[in-house]
Length: 91
Image (tube, rainbow, N blue to C red; front, side):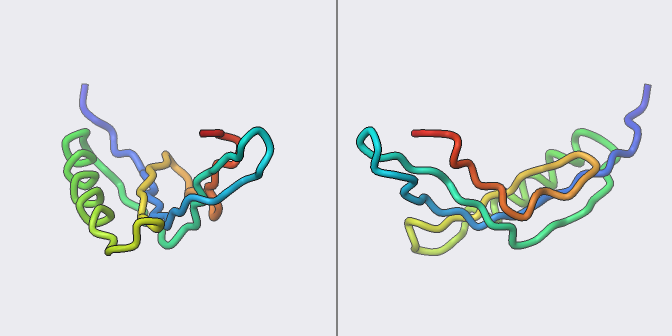
């Protein structure tokens, strides 16, 4: 059985850690603001892995700011949300 073409949306986010509150000693969360969306149709898992490797290399080179990063997320058949922050995930 062959691989059917599948549409993926790759969203690139700028991320930073923010202080969420002072209760119970304080907590932080990752804020993500979308910079760009890419829409791509893939014909194989190997093609997805190849593109993913390229994207990971590109977002890894983000400069010298320790508090700002780039992050890539893949979504099936839809764009990623504009704000993909996670204040509900305590660390």
